[in-house]
Amino acid sequence: MKVFSYIHHVWYYLVALVTIVLLLPALLWTARPGGNYHHFFKVAKVWSWMYLVGMGVWPRPGKYQLKHDGPVVLSPNHGSDLDIPLTFLASPTPVVFMGKAELLKLPLFGYFFKQTSIAVDRSSFSGRKQAMIDADQKIKEGYSVCIFPEGGIPPQKYLMRGFKAGAFKLAVENNVPVVLLSIYQSKFRLGDWGQPSSIGPVDTKVLGEYWADTESANPVQELMDRSYRVLAADLKNWGHTGEVALPLDEN
Image 1 (cartoon, helix red, strand yellow):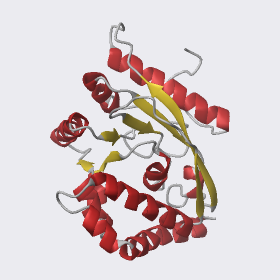
Image 2 (image 1 turned 45 degrees about the horizontal axis):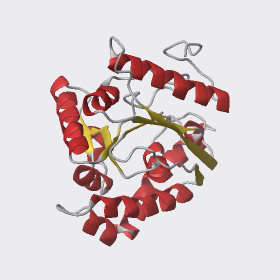
Image 3 (image 1 turned 45 degrees about the vertical axis):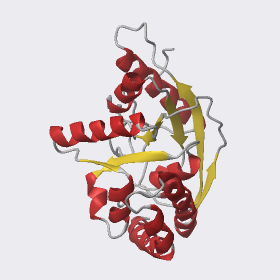
Image 4 (image 1 turned 180 degrees about the vertical axis):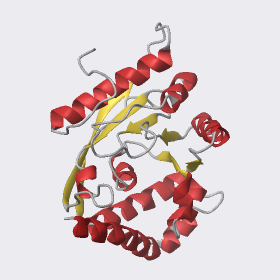
């Protein structure tokens, strides 16, 4: 089992590289400075399908039509490195991703990540602060932003790790909804190095649009806690198990 996990992780990098090379002209054109991000997002969807199928993963994104006409903060759970292409396919609107600065070091992928996304250096306060400033600017420019609120991929013993406040603070301060996205099987398809890995489908589902309660004493905390419970309860109902950061029996 561990041998297959290691092979699958090496294959992850090879497939990513090959599929990017195959789409390189379109990616370079749409990700160029001054290019149209919506065009890049469409090409990235094609890349996501190619990449996931090459990984032996069949994505099954659920359909969802946004009610809000404007930018949103998309917040999925985070189970594995497969979640970025899965989110490209499942997002109901083009989103600019916020991701760890380590992605900048990946061949080719790092270049496109730098051109089109928001890199956050989680090791420094100034790096985290600058990433939120950049995300706030994107929202004000009319772009939706995707932030994985767990702040990284948790160990597989967790159902979901506790949320960071950034995504919810961004939504409250810009008066936009948080859109919650469940990604179900990804941590079983590509878990941690040495953890069980497999091929097969991955389902995703948009749970809806969630607005802050402006009458709450702390709208950011209220929205964050409510979002955690909604997303964690949905994962649990689907069949995921593991430790949680908040009790799930509150409304």
